[in-house]
Structures are given as structure tokens and as C-alpha cells.
Length: 533
Image (cartoon, rainbow, N blue to C red; front, side):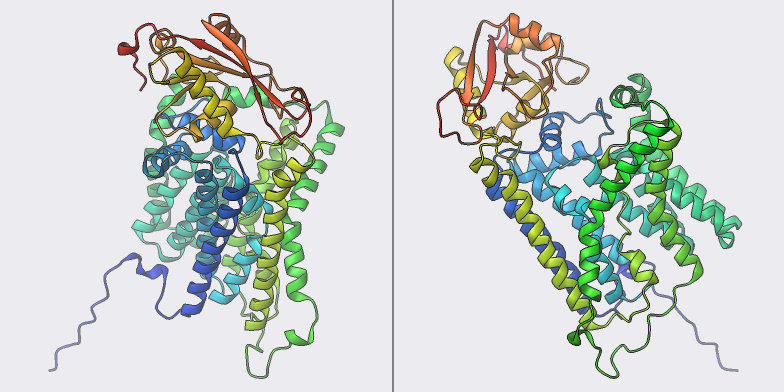
């Protein structure tokens, strides 16, 4: 009797992310498009911007110390910036490149997710369309929690879908890991996570012991990841949530709430307008778009009903939940709150469109994507810098950050031989000084120690401090200085005012386009005991 043949299955690895049967040209195109977007936006911002955006400046300030949480947000983006600064040092270009890297990583992961439902070429078209949503290009000039959330959110979607389809334990664990990391980026990550849970509830095929056990494993891994931040929240009396309550603006009644929702919806429509233009160009009737006989003439294959539900639920959940929060809480929705709601925006039209994904369709889509990306990039960077300088209009992008940092170190050196280690200022001025300073520098934000727990109470006396206050007329988004900063300024041993060439003025020194910064120096009393963690 012959022995039965043994079938040895290959070991389970992550190589399944890129099956060997896929066309290599799609994988190469994904990499080229992602690299091209990073180079385009990173180079343009590096060549034109003279200062980081506000949120990037904030990350420069926070990255001085690795904390379990910061007074406004969870810690993961700041941990990433801390690591990047340790490897590459500080520069104005660093946050721009890091932000675009986050965006294209998220887009590449959504391409891989789309390949679970459709052909790689069709998913590539969807990725190119999604890249045109302005949250994924213009919004990439600021390294903040919205942009850093994108790749973690995309990875959660991918691994959760793979887990529900393949029912493998390591995939459930990875879904939980990225869900936890998403929450460690920004608390609004609970909205797309709620979409995943809704899909699980609605898909009865998952209601098995193995499926429930996998979901519990994901939840357990997610809980383990967020434990440090949860403990920090408890110890700080939920500081970020108190901050959110302070800055939230309640609307007076239903009519105002509906008007606010309409304004929010209009803003989101503007955000997806480049995507709609790209689709219009891609689908516009043209002789060149006719498909040669025998090439992709068949309509796109149907996507399984469960997969359609996965795409629709998780594409709409973040935006629907955001609108629901605004409607039932009657708070004003800020336009940027839709930043994480459009990752799957390119998959939706490709899901419902029956036109075959021919090479011609891909070519026209890529043409539109490249042209629109270039136009948006030039409009954003030149509008905030070259044109703003031409018309003497102050923006954050044309702020003379290098001049500010030079004046800071020169003034400090004029009064003491001890190295400058501590600046007291708002996050904008402090972040600009850090961006142009090679050595490690701490900032006591607004003179308030709960915002900068890495600065001990006695540090100002021991280390000395340079106090900065922006007094520019009609300043860009600055509030009046906090009383704590004013109190420290009153204690300064020396003080004065700098006049900065903001927007390259061509008129007299007191022209409106000039910026002014009030400074004060508190001399160090015990520099050898200066301890900043």
C-alpha cells in the first residue's frame, strides 16, 4: 500500500503582504508615487519656508522630554519627533518631510487594503485619487497628531480586515497593536475604531467562538498599549480632556448648530474638490480613452457584499460620527476635525464604478494626480512665502525664524557665559528657536510648569532663562501673554525689544510688516545645579 503524500504548508510570514503573483509595475508605481510626493512637498517647503508651522513648532518644544502624555494630546507623535531629532537634528525641513512620509505611508497601506477587494491597478487608481484630498497634501506642511494618525489608522484597517478574513491570531494581535498606537496618537482614533466594531457586529459570519476570541485578543493588546497614557490621564486629572472642554465653543440652539454643521460640510467638500477634479479628468470622454479590443474590456468584477460593507462602513464612520458629535453636543465643529475621514475616499468611487481599470484609465488618473499635486504645492508654498513677501503679508511660513534664533543666542551671550538652556515663551517662538538651534534647548511654555513638566520649579533661578513675548501688531494667531510669563518678565535682570524683518519690508523701520519681540534675561544663579530632564 503506497504511503500518502505529505503536504507541507509554507510557514506563516508577513510575505503575504506582497504576493508574488502581483504585477511588479503596480508595486513600483506605488513606491514611485509615494517617493515623488515626499520629494515634491518636502523640497518645496524646505526651499521656501523660513519657519515651521505652529503644530510642528509645538512638537519641537514637546520633544525635549519623553512623557506618557502632554497637556493637549497623547504622546506618540512627540516620541516620533524626539527620535527624528535625535537622528537628524533640528531643522525647518524635518517636520515637512516627516509629515509627508506619514501621509504616503498611509496611502500605500490603503492601496494594499484595496488589493484585498480589487485588482492592484484599480487600487492604485484609488490611492492616486485619495492623495488629492487636501488633508493628504496641503495639510502635510504640519507635523501634528492628525497627520501622524493616518498611517496607524490605515494599518489598523488593513490588519483588522485580514484578521476577519483569515482568522489568524497574529493578525488579530496586530490589529489590536495598531488600534492602541492610533489611540496613543490622538483620541479621535476611537471613531474609526468604532466603525470596525460596527462592521464586526453586522457581519454575522464573524460571530463564532474563534472570531469573538480574536476580537478579545485585539482589545487586550490595544488596552496594554494604552495603559501608560491611561495612568498618566488619571494622575493629571484628564488634562487633555479639560483642555478640549476649554477650547470647545458651544452653539446657541439648534439653528446655530445646523449652520455650523453646514459650514463644516462645505469645508469638507472643498477638501475633496481636487479628488473630484481628478475623477472628472480621468473619466472625461476622449478618443484616447477608448480601450483597444481585447484589453480589459470586461467590466470590473463585483466585490463581495461583506467587503463592500467593510469599505462603506469604515469610509463613512469617522465623518458620520464627527457630525453626530456636533449635532448632539451642539458644539462648533472645526474644519480640520475631518482630517482622518478620507483615507478610503479613493476606494469608494472605484467600488461603484463599472468601467474597467485599463492602462489608459490609470494613465489619465496619474496625469491628473501629478498635475493637481504640483499646482497645489506651488499654490501653497509660493502663496505663503514668495507672494506673501511680495505683498508684505505676514504668515507663519515667512516668519524669520533664523533671525529670531540668532538674536536669542546673541543677546544671551551678551549677558552671561553660561550656555542658554531654557527659554520661556509660547510654543511658536520657542519652537522657532529650537528649529535653528543645534544643541538641546528646553522651553517653559507660557511660563506654566504644567505645560512643561520637564522644567522643575526651581529651574528658572538655577539655569537662568531667556523670556520671549511676541508683541507684533496684528500678530498671526497669537494670544496675549499669560500672567505667569508676564511675572517672569518683570523679574528679568535685563530686557529689550527686537525688530524682526518679517515679510521683507521695504519701508521704514516701524512699518506694519515688521515684527517685534520683547525679550528679558534672567541670569543663572546656580548653573552647576541646572537640571532639565
